[in-house]
Structures are given as C-alpha cells and as structure tokens.
Length: 439
Image (tube, rainbow, N blue to C red; front, side, top):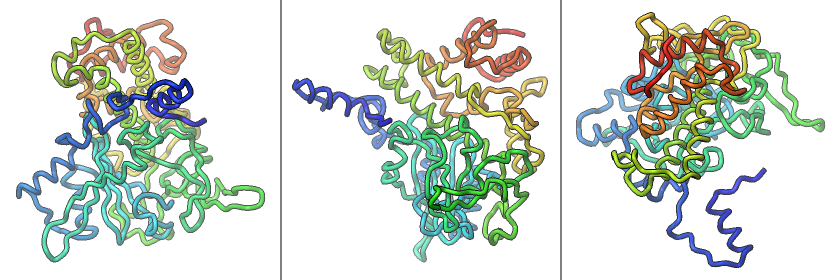
C-alpha cells in the first residue's frame, strides 16, 4: 500500500477536479520545517545541542579527542552506559562500507540519545529534542588543530524524515535478511519500527547475546539467496552467550555483548520516540493560531474534527505505552548482561513501597515488564507534551485501569497489574487529573 502525504493527496485531487491549486500557505503536521514547527530555526534543546553550545562557549572540552577514547568520554558526558551496547552487522547508516560481521557497528543509548560507532570510523548521534524530535550529528575526531567537532547532518533527513517516520525527524530500525558480507538481501520486519514486531521478524542483521528461549528470531543469522528464495538458518546461532571468536571483541567498549534486554528496550524506545513526536507535531498544528508552548494554547477551542483527531492520537499512544501489541516471551530470558540490567534498574523512579515501571518480568510467557506502562513517560519528550494532551491521556488511562471492560485493546492487563500501575502513577507523576483511581 502506497502512503501519500496529505499535501500530495490534495494536489492530486485538485488536478483531477480541474480546480485551482493553492498550497503555498497550507501546511500539515509533518511539514516539520514550516510554521508552526520551524525545526531549522529552533534553538534545539536536545542533550547534544546543549553540549555543542557548551564546547563553543569554552565551558567543556574532551580530554581524549580521538578514536575509541573519544567515544568513551562522549558516552560518559551524556550519561550513556557502555553496557547498553548493541551491535549491527548489516550495512546500514552513513558508514555502511565499513560495517561487516567482522567489524560491526556499535550502538549505545539512554532515554534521550543514541550513539553509533564503527571501529576505524566516526561517531554518529541522534539526540532527541523534547518537542521537535531527532537531531542528527557526527562527531569528527580532532586533527592537529584542536577540538573534536559536532557537525549537524541535515542530509540525514532524507531517510530519517521519510515514510519510515511519518516524514518527521525520527528514528529508524530495520531488520534485514543479511548476507555473510553484511549486504541486506530483503527486509524482514513490517514497515513501522517498535515493540509490536513479532520475534520471528526481529533483529535481522543484529547480533543478539544472552541466554533465552526465543529461538525464532533473525539475530546472528546469515542469509543467502537461492533459486528457492531467501534461505536462513534460524537455529544455528539463535542463542549466543557472547561474541568471543566471532570478531575481535576488544575493539568495542562493551566487548562481545549485544544484550537481548538492551535490544528489547531499544525496540521499545524507537517506537515510543516516533509516536510521541507525531503527537507533538499534530497537537502543535492544532494549536497553530498561538504559540503551542504559551498558556493561551491550552485554552484554544478545538474544532470537532481536531478533537476527534486528538482522541485518536491519545488512544493510539495508550495502546503503545500500555504494551498492547508486545509479544510474550515464549521460552523466557534466563540471563542478560548484569551490568546493563543493574544500570537500567538503578534509574527507576520508585514508589514508597519500592515499585516502579522498570520492574522486569523476563519469565517464560512474561512481557519484559511486570507493570506494563512505559518508563518513558518520565522522559523530557513526554513531560513537554501540551498539558491538555497529558491531562486527557491520564484521564483515559484512569478509565482503562478501573473500567470493567476498558476495550479489547487493554484486556491484557489484569486487575492486580492495573492496581499496581495506578499506584505507581499516583506516587510518581504530578498534576494528575481529578479523580485518579485509588487502590
């Protein structure tokens, strides 16, 4: 199915009707470079843009300006754990020529920044502005003249603001049938990235380490094209404790780890960031008569069509953040990288009873999290959503957590889990709507 931007569709309809064509002043939510979004004119507030301004002002400099040491110092400054490392051997990104099974690309991430590095190459960064989405940088190592330099790469928008991301500055993640030399010979996953993809379609071209029972995934596998189509052995390397012996693991900060828990969280966050940015852009378009960040924006009356659109966006976002489509862990996960697990859990926001949205359930038939509401609701991108969106989001969530029949999309949540989620939200989120459920 071909998806057309609304502006393109209007043009086609006008041509068919033989009527006048006047689109110069008309914009849509995903015209990110035009008013009211003005992406290229913003003083961006993502972590890397802030760091670049500190460097320019002489307030910070990298102590080790080259190579692997520069990467290590960057991750430390951005509070990104090296244990978050996941490894990609499919030839994707700006450095596709340097990527192979013998020299995989490493990705490191936290809740706001994604950093990519290939041994012998340069550092690529996607930093999330809380209201405008992905900001794309490369960090070039220093030459003899001085400091490493952040270079903003707007040419990345050719892919990262295309159909994969609803034409907004977002994140891409592909699963490909990947040949031995790293070439993709077919895409495995459905079109939209996120946590709703079945495991049988995930991680093609990615290394996966850990001990688990997810036998059907595409990670670690090598595909080949034959007269009978694409052939791939899903069982030979489905479970790898580490990657020692596959390549020289001393080159990477995280050694031979591409941990399955880190991959699961990366999958979730990619989908979260793309969806929440669509919410930001849509709501800002609805409120485009005034600055969307001003108090007046919160009192602007929506048209019935806009109200219907806002309701639909909230429902879609609730399905994602409440893990409606997340597959169960058939076979479970027996062992993950302890260093990554510890740092992930250490960042939990706890209730007085010690519960959090980061509590894990990796058992067979589990669903990664014990309390299935995304921990990303504490992120800056969520906090910066217009108040009317957040208020209606939590109002509808309160209905879901208390209704006898909240709708088929939310039947996966049992009574005890809904009670725990309500308690955690009440204890950790400010400015909830009146009548939030009490258990």
